[in-house]
Amino acid sequence: MNIGIVCYPTYGGSGVVATELGKGLAEKGHKVHFITYTQPVRLNIFNENICYHEVYVPNYPLFLYPPYELALASEIVNVVKHEKLDILHVHYAIPHASSAFMAKQILKTEGIKIPVVTTLHGTDITLVGKDASFAPVVTFSINQSDKVTAVSNSLKEDTYKIFPIQKSIEVIPNFINLERFKRQSKEHFRRAICPKGEKLLVHTSNFRKVKRIQDILFIFQQLQKHIPVKLLIIGDGPERVNLEELCRELGCQEDVRFLGKLDAIEEVLSIADAFMMPSEKESFGLAALEAMACEVPVISSNAGGLPELNIHGVTGFVSEIGDIEDMVKNTLTLLKDENLPTFKKNALARAKDFEISKILPMYERVYQECLEQIQLKPETEKIDILTI
Ligand code: GMT
Image (cartoon, rainbow, N blue to C red):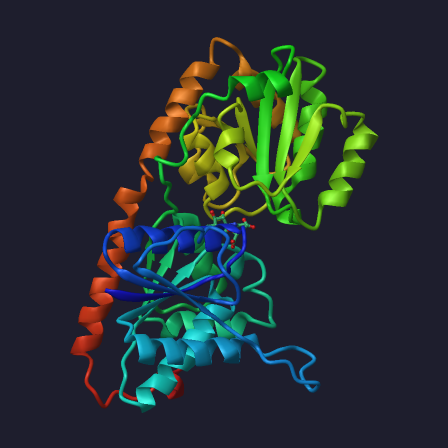
């Protein structure tokens, strides 16, 4: 198939999933065209089946807000026409699903049919998407997609609760490449970070408020009263300054290291004992899955899809959002020498359920169904705008 993928090119989970999906499809022989405003961070390989098309937004003094959605829709039209795409897969509803809808209508006037698959990733529904500024457009463009997928049952249910959606939503979870994410021998690194045999906690995210990283620092301060422990925090984002200040206030700055944005996350995960994810919202928790693949059990909140991934008492522990006391108790249980090896083994076993080779065919099937569906639709079909 000749597949167009529209996504955010950043470190965020939706961009990572979209890019890894495209890479996986290209390896299976599909031709994949990424359409976005800059080179996706995980698109760091050469593959003869992958092309990258940059969306260029011209500047004009009148534009206080550069109209990215229009430039994206135009680029989609060009790529579909010139590269003869079979299918368009957009990741994150805002603004990708509405740009795809516009492109589809433009192409229809030229007699070109292009089915659109929209994958919902989380905050496009549970946070920013439900804002009154976007909700009508999000609802419309989801309903107009040929197929809609969500990354967890929780996100599917939230979507139906928040918006009047008539479309059926299929759950296709996040996935992992176990060839890349696996525990490696990095004992020298571990000795440098934990010279006295301390236990090691790791967190990675984009440092947005919804991640509740401050909870990790409060948990860490409590843990230090019981056991020798260190904390590594990977990533960057809006909360970084506040977190560094909180570290100093709590007096744990010597034992917490901020590593910034790292590409080889798996090397750090390889020396970790527990992964911390106390998020307020988390539709799936890709970062936790990456940790589990490296045999790192997870201490998480029960937000969104986290309990679907992190099995309480098996692959880690799940607590109510913000219940720091419970997370401290659970982390102490998890880190006990007699418990930790079992949790590590279980974490890896669970990660194997989401191996890319199991999940990728689900997307291929969705594409195939879309193509069959669009071929059955009559040529004269009208735009459904009047019926909504
Ligand atoms: O977690 C983030 O803030 C990034 C966000 C994104 O939209 O890129 O990630 C979302 O999509 C990921 C991939 O499907 C999920 O694994 C994350 O759980 C989800 N984040 C939230 O729901 C907050």
